[in-house]
Length: 304
Image (cartoon, rainbow, N blue to C red; front, top):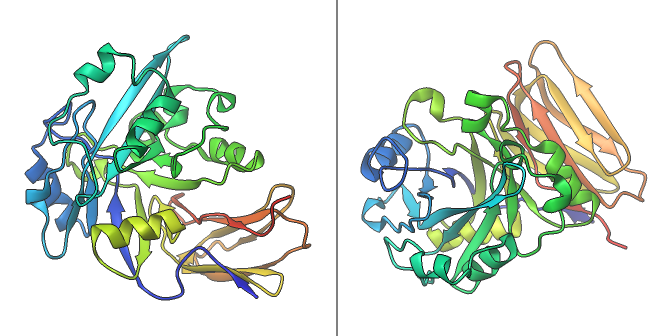
């Protein structure tokens, strides 16, 4: 019996779901940003300007899709804050372009992470927890949050400029308490300089439409990356298998044990890992010669 999150059929599409423009604190206009991502080989993106909901559907092209979205934040005691990114479908989203949430803020509708998640869910949007390491939140404050589709395991802007964008430990804490969530890599870009573009998800979708991509994400048919490329990941006959483009390190991870493979010539393209049979889930991290990583989604094997 085979278990997987990546669809067995379909095509990978590359995208970034956390981006800013001049509609909030970004340097470049939405058109400039979209054009740069398209030129950089991306197939889709979302504008998630702070406290401004943007649809930007005039920027869609036959080979490039733009998702509506925004990013909201809540200040917490101790110089910490929640940042939650919301993404919607053009067809079902119920929030108008340019909405700034003034009335919701007056009425304390968006005063907790739980309320933000619920608010967007009721309006046809999904939510992702943004850069927890950068935000300095404790994992105990977020690991039980329900209703999100995932969290940022890697935020390129935070990592490049502050060395605090890698949140792998937070993701493990979600999984350790059996919170079935997915991991995302994003740019959180505020300009379109080459060094600002470096985090993405690769979605294996059966249909290159907004709905097709979002369905694949909700199903877990994607991986997160800061560079390396994963081609397939699955479990069959009590073994986990990974296939990827050449890398130096492959790590299989479960709640209580793991396995690793290493090469100093960036020559690893596949590996397999024998399971004991009592693992709740297995996931894989790969790393290339530049130290860049890619992360699969966990394959849940059983849940007591």
